[in-house]
Length: 307
Image (cartoon, rainbow, N blue to C red; front, side, top):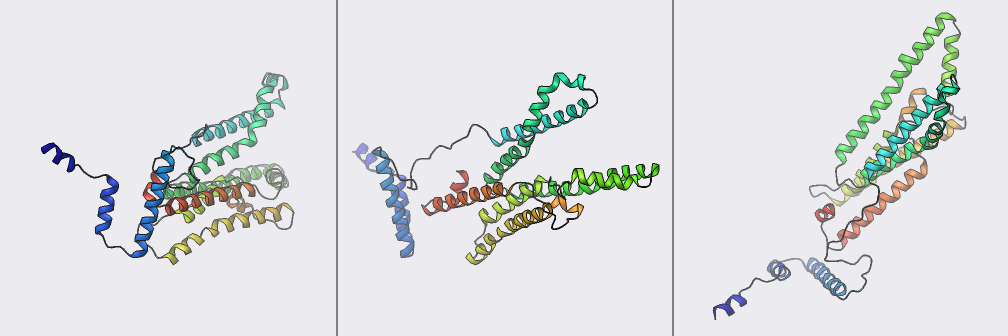
């Protein structure tokens, strides 16, 4: 008798206890219908999975799926980017030295060729590494915005300081020997360094804009907010896109000779090609859509972040 009582008093399954708790609560009819629909889909998915059949792409599954990890992480991309930068600088130094002592640099001809080949890959590797970090950031936007924004400001301030202190300093020194030599040096410097009328070098402007776009698109408020405010907040994602488009238009007009940009406007221009930014927007929208599908199937945002 005691054993039979113990068997009968065994605790119910978690699903049964959850149903009993939900049954004791009074919910609106619409919410009850949604809960029943989610439970029905989960039961159907569990049955199909138990039978070994292939599930639809967006079907709710009970088991925790594995996460796919590619062969290269963002750290590997970062290392490859800096390695390309170092090789390009070594190649530049050896090429410059070859103009004065060709015989001394002759054994390093292969290294110079490798450096010239990988030098254009520096920017794509760094962009891919940082794009991966931005796209996979789980609401850690504050640190990314402060980092990229601060570095963008530092890079923007560095150029005027270098130009005013060093370049104009050399021009003043040259003008002491001949009055017109300083002006000719400045003209030669601008023609060589700014052949298109600008120089796009501040990569942190691009990263700041991408982080800002992702922030406006995917950020979730910790407190309940009205739907109208959320829509307005999401629409602010247009601002980084507008900045990117304006920068592309200005660079195109300057390159064609239609306008002349001030020298100190270069640090605030974007560096990446338009298709790179378009690819980032497509990936961000894909992630946002995946999140909506995840939440639509009865999951919580906390579980999505644990992902």
